[in-house]
Amino acid sequence: MNGPLENIQTSIASLRAEIINHKVYAVIEDLEDLRIFMEYHVYAVWDFMSLLKSLQINLTCTQVPWYPVGSGNTRALINEIVAGEESDVDANGDKKSHFEMYLDAMQQCGADITQINRFTETLKATGDFEKAYTHSDTPAEARSFVDYTFKIINSGEAHLQASAFTFGREDLIPNMFLTIVNDLNTKFPDQISLFKYYLDRHIEVDGDHHSHLALAMTSELCGDNESHWKAAEAATIESLKKRIELWDGAYEEIMAVKG
Image 1 (tube, rainbow, N blue to C red):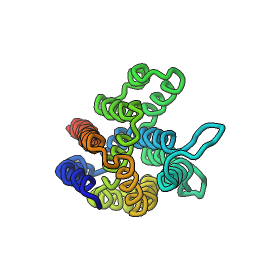
Image 2: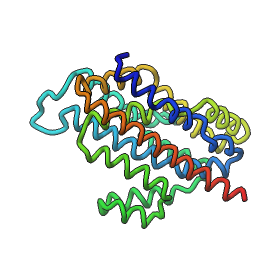
Image 3: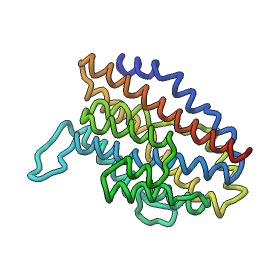
């Protein structure tokens, strides 16, 4: 791994540790707690696809006439991940995006999908994020999270999108959370099995292969440009801070319900 990549990983180590050891995981004790967590997390599952598609638009040719764009390595990475995220195999063997699989898991668990559906439907119809947030009563922390993701997307800067994608979204599901979900699945297999499948599948398709390619992509896009590396580091740090805020919001709501 090259020096700039190592510098970013060093600079974000404490933030990553804060996410992986976040207090929200310790308070997820039953189905109601998990439902609240999922109602916040689903926004990150949704906007991940937009971040990924923005990279596909920047790093591959998505128009006609077709011409080769960028390097074959980055094209292969993005196209492979898009295929895996947009048309994976669900627990029944049907082709679905990970977002759709997550919605299925929420419904099985008893979580409310009305809010996220109203958000995406309003946004699709109007293109207006503020209207979508207001109409769906999106939590403030989820608004802030999505807003920052789209700030990165709308920058049009592939190196910023790549850094947020590589360091801000990968490898952030701690073993503690997987243990909680496995325990709940043992108690409530008819309500947790799809969420467990989603997590297992997500980890499988986002394994070491994709992680290594994503690091290589970020390195290639930043190259020898010091300002690109500094901007990539700043974007990564802010992305992780927004994730912490999102988890804070879920934690506060879970605790409020617990009374």
